[in-house]
Image (cartoon, rainbow, N blue to C red; front, side):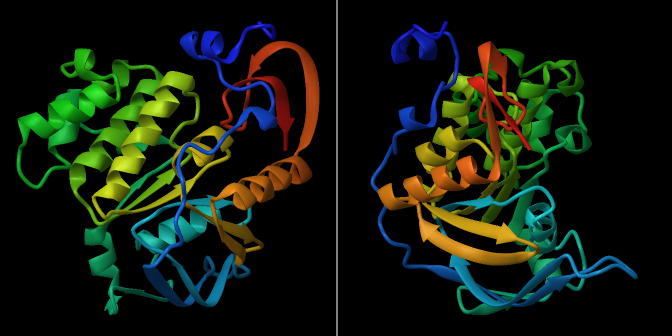
Length: 282
């Protein structure tokens, strides 16, 4: 397996072997639109604060990856941002403050555990409940993009975990919400399906959507993300564009923060990077 060239591995749905194989897939221009966070803090009842952002501007109408160690506050930030947690501070979007109800209406979040977000009797119905108005053409287009068209009449719970993940992503894309948040959207996906998800995220940005992606999938980041937000201890400690310098910076982060163990053979990675020649141990 390790002697296969890049094209052969892609044809088999396998991921990269080494970080230096990753290349940026598109030219990144500086962000011109931002969204403001003010007093964006959160703590569970009688617990220490897990999120503390006093004042910060973050990219809008971009595909921004959110990175950080486990427990850094990434998922808490996403839940607060979408107003799934209450009393999390203020968001200013396009110059206007967004009330919690506004955020619930403007945001769509795909959680890492997608089984909690699949409700209907068929994939087709799952897409339709996200739409403002039924649109057969849009439904078909999204299902074809995510390699789900042959399963449109299947019950979501009869699918594999990777297929369920793509159904949840399809529902988000069909929702036409202004802001979409994805928590590990390519977990368990092979190369082909990771590329399909990346294509959807790029299309959403081209339609002026604001996309935030929590992920450890460096291939996905290099393919479609335009900006990076780095969390640590509930705070944003760094932001930078996903240009060539950004790619080097994020590669160093993954190498520094994770212990790499080379193994003999090809095993699925538990980090979301996919099929690789190493396991990344947290």
